[in-house]
Picture 1 (cartoon, rainbow, N blue to C red):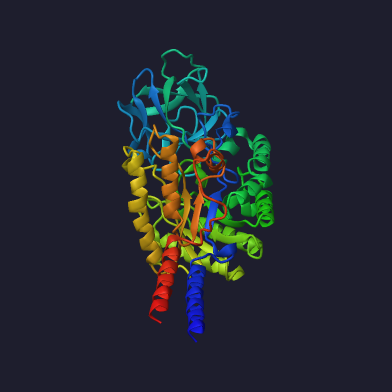
Picture 2 (picture 1 turned 120 degrees about the horizontal axis):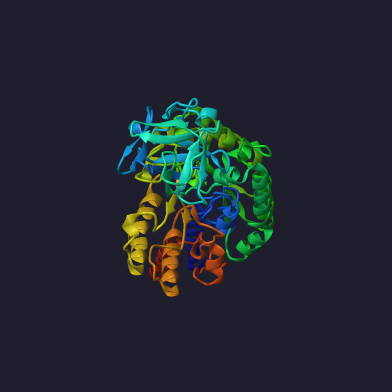
Amino acid sequence: MEFLFHKWVFAFLFSFWLLFSIALSVEGLKENSKVRGVNLGGWLVIEGWIKPSLFDGIPNADMLDGTEVQFKSVTLQKYVSAENGGGSNVTVSRDIPSSWETFRLWRVSQMEFQLRSTQGQFWTCDFQGSSVSATTEAPGTNETFYIERLNNSSRIHIKLQSGIYLQALTESQLTADYQGTPGWDDNAATFEMTIVSNNLHGDFQLAIGYGHAKAKKILEEHRSSFITIGDFYFLSRHGINAVRIPVGWWIAYDPDPPAPFIGGSLAALDDAFSWAEEYNIKCIIDLHAAPGSQNGMEHSSSRDGSVDWPTSQDNINKTLDVIDFLASRYAKNPALLGIELLNEPSAAGVPLDIMLSYYQQGYRIVRKYSSSAYVIVCQRIGNADPLELYQANIGSTNVVVDLHYYNLFDTFFVNMNSSQNVDYIYKTRETQLQQLNNASGPLVFIGEWVNEWNVESGSKQDYKNFGKAQLDVYNAASFGWAYWTLKNDRKHWDFEWNIRKNYLEFSKSSSPGLQASNVVLFLVLTCSYLFLYQIL
C-alpha cells in the first residue's frame, strides 16, 4: 500500500510539473521549448549599415534621398532659409543655420533633386525671373532642380530644368535670373553646400541611387547570396529553432511592386520557408517597413525621415492588405510560427490609438486564416510603456508583445562600463521582464537584442559576460528571444561571428523551455515528495 501511494504521489507531482512546463512553452516548437531565434536582418529589407558595400557603386552617393543639406551664399555669406520652415518665400538671410535652413533631398537622378523644407513643402520656381518659394506639397517639374558640384566638393550651382541658374542678389529672395553660365569664383550663383546628415541607406535610397535596372541586378545577387540554405543548416546545428524575417510592404505586390521598389523578395521568402521546413526551424514574418514609414528610419524604407504612415488612412489600409496577403499565403505552411504586424512604430510619430486600432484589425485578419499562428505586436520605440499593449485587448489567443532590448541608442548607456552594463541586465531588464511575464495577457518576446554596447575597451571576457547575462535573463521571456542579426558587417552584431568566435555560448541540447522558474518548481515539488515520503 505504501509503495503504491509513493508511486501515485510521484506520478502526480511529475505530471503537474510537466503540465507547467508545457504551459510555458510555445505551440508549434518541438521539445516543449520557447523561441530561440535569430533575425535575418538586411536581407529582404535593406539596411546599409549591415552591408555597406551594397551602396559602393552609387554616383554622388553622399546625396541620396533623405540627405539633409544647407546652402550658404558665397557673396552674401548668408544661409538659404525657408521662412517659417515652409509655406512661404525662400530667403538668403540667416547668419547661423538651424531647422529652417536645413532641407531634405528627394533624389530624381544623379544631378536632379527636389528640396523639402522642415514643414514638408518643396522648393518651387515657375519660370525664369521668378523667385523661389517653399509652398508645394507634391513635387513635379517646377520643383526639380539640378545641383552641379565642383569636383564633388562643397561648392555648387543650382539651376532650373530650363537651364537658368538661381542666384542670391539680396537677402530677401532667391531668384532664377543669373545671366549665362557662372564660374566657380565668388559670384551670386555660387553656394557652399553643407551635408548635415546622410543617414538613410535603405531600399528607397538604393533603388533611386542606382536606377531600376542596376538596382535590380544588385538586389538579385544580394538576395540569392546573403542568406542561403547553408545558413539554416548552421542555425539548426547551433540550437536555433526560429528565424524572424523582416519584409517590406511591397512584397505583397511582387513581382512588380510600385516604384522604386524592386521585385524578388517574395520568392526569397518562399525559399526561406522551404529551408526552414527542411531543418525544422519556424518562421516569424515581421513587417519591418510600412507604406509612408512608421518610424522615419532606413529599415522602414523611409524616403526622407518623415513618419507618414499614421497620417493617411490609405497607408493603414494598404498595410492591412499586406497582412492579409502574408497570412493567406503562409497560414497553412507548417514552418509558420507567427506574423509580426509592424516593427518599431515611433512613439513620437504614431499615436497610441491609431497603433492599437491597427493591431486589433491585424489580429482579426490573421485569425481569418489561422487559429493558432502567433500574432506579434511590437512596442513603440521612444518614450512608451510596454504595459500599454497589455491593457489594450488586442486579441484573445496567442498574442505576443515584442520588446527590443539594446544597451545602445540612448545617452543613458554612454558612460557605462562593462560591469555596469551587466548589472543593468540583471537588475533593470530582469525586473521588467518578470513584471511583464506576470502580467495577464500576451506573451513576452525579446525580438531584438545584440551582444554589443558603448564600452570601447571591452575584452573578450567582458563581451562573454555581457552575452551570458542577456541569455540568462532573456531565456525567461515567456515566448523567447531573437538575436539581431545573423550577418552583419559589424562583427559583434553578427550572430554567426559571435558563435564561431565563442563570444556567445549556449548548448544545442539545453532547452529554452526548461527555464529557471520551471526548475525551481520541480525542485519544490520534489522536496514536497521527499517530505511526504518521510512522514508516511
